[in-house]
Image (cartoon, rainbow over all chains, first blue to last red; front, side, top):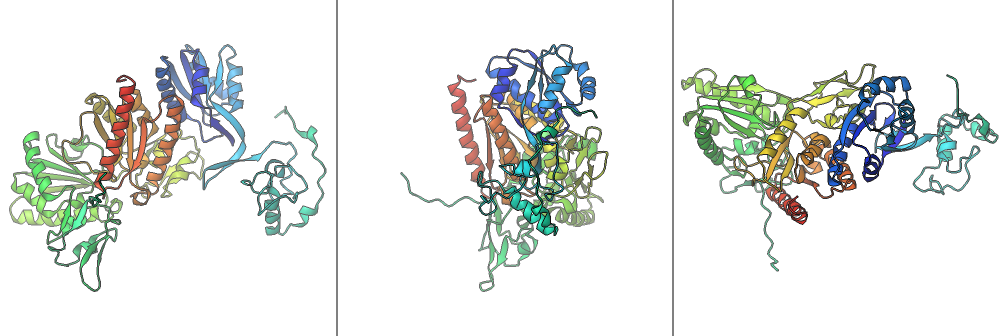
Length: 213
Length: 389
C-alpha cells in the first residue's frame, strides 16, 4: 500500500485560501490509513473551523473515489460533482493527485497528503514501514522475502556490512539490520547457501518509468 | 498553606457496624472487590477493584452498604417528584447501556407518557424500590435491560431477570395483576451497510471481540453474537459504513443540537463514557454545561466532536474510564488516542486547548468534578481573552 501522512492543516488552509468552493476527494484505494469518506468529511469540518478563524467561509463538497489513480473510475466519480467547484483538494497519494489534475486541467488540484513510501502496517503497534522501492529487478527470491535494496540503509546486495550492533543498523539504531533478518530467515528455511551466492551490482537500467500493460 | 490531608471520597462504603457478615455481597460481586478476612471474619471492600455496579448495595439484607449513586432514598425522592412532573403512573427504567435517550420507549412498550429513570445497570435497583414505587401508586413498570450475557457488570442483567420474575409472582399474589413489571432486553450491535464497505479491514483489525471478519470478497462480515456493541469499529470505519444501534450518528447529532439550543456561553459539552461518570438524578449541570452519554468511550466520534465546535461549543471534554476499568476492551485507550490526534489537528488550524480528554473512575466521584471544574476554568479564560467569542 501507499503510505501517506496528512499535511499540516495550516499549510492546507493556505493552499485552499484563494478558493471559495472546494471539493475534497477521498481515495478508498491503497493509501494507509484509508483516506475515504470519513477522512474527507473530518477534513472538511476542520478546514471549515480553521476558515472561520481566518474570516473565510469555505464551502466544501465531500466525495470519495474507489481508486484515484484510475483515471476512468475517477473521471466518472468526480465529473458530475465538478460544476461549481473552484478547486479540488485530494486525499490521495501523489499519483492520485496527478490523475485528478490531468483529468481537470482547468482546475487547481491540491494535495492534502504527503506521500511517503510503499510499505506495510505492522498490525501490532500501528507502525508503517517502507518495504519496496520499486527497483525493477526483484531479488526477494534470494533474500528470504526481505528486501535489502529497501531495508538496508546502504542498499547492499551482498551483506551484511559488519556495522550492525545487536541486530540494529549502525546508520539508524531504531532500524533492524536487513541482512541480519535475511540471515535468520534463510537459516530458518535451511537455505543459508543462498547468502554465499554473489549478486552483481544493480542494473539501474531495469528501473522502468513507463510500461505497457 | 493548609497541609491537611483529606480522605478521598469514595462511591461505595461498607458499614461494619451493620454488617451481619452473611457474605451475599461477596458472592454477587462481579469484580471480586469484596473479600472476607479469614481470621476476623469481617467482610472487606477493596474500593480499587470496585466498579460501582451497585449489585451489592441492592442485595445486602442488612443495609450495611452505602452508595452515593442511586441509593434507595434518592430514587424514591426522585420518583415522588417525577410522578408529579410527568403526571404519569407508568415508570420506565432503562439501563443506560441501552440508549442515550428515551426516544424508543413508545415503540418498545407502547407508552407515551411515563416517568423516565435511566440507571447504569438495572441490577442496582433493589426489590425494595420496586415495591415502594408500587405503593406510591405507580401502576406499570417497564424495564429495558441489556441481554443477560451482555451486561457490562456481568451479573447485573441476570439479577434483574430473577428479581422481576420473583416480584411479578409476589405482586400477582398480592392482587396486582399478572405482569406488573414488564422486562425487555436489548443488546446494542453494530449495523453495517455493506454497500458502503471498501474492504479495508479496519473493523476486523480494531474489533476486540473478533466479531468483524474480512476473509472473503463482498466486504466485511459481522458475527453479531460476538459483537459487544462498544462502537470502536464505527468510530474507526473510514467509509462511514457502520453505525451503532441506538447510538446512530444522526441520533447523537440530533441530541447534540437539542442540547446546544438550551446552553448558555461559554458552552461546554461533555462526552462521557456512561461507566466513567454517573450523572445525578436531576438538575445536573450549570446552564453552560451539557453531556452526552456514550456506551463506551470507544464510540466517541470525530464527527460529533467537530460538529460541536462547528455549532458554537467553546470546549469539549471527553471523559473515559481509566484504561484498566474499561468495561469493554481498550475502549478508553483508543478514545484517548483519537482525541490526542484530533487535538493536534485542532491546534494546527489555530484552535488549541478546546478539546480535553480525561480518565476518571466512577468510584472516586470527585475526579470528574475536578476535571470538569478545571476544564471550565480554562475555557472561560480562553473565551474571556477573546472577548467572549
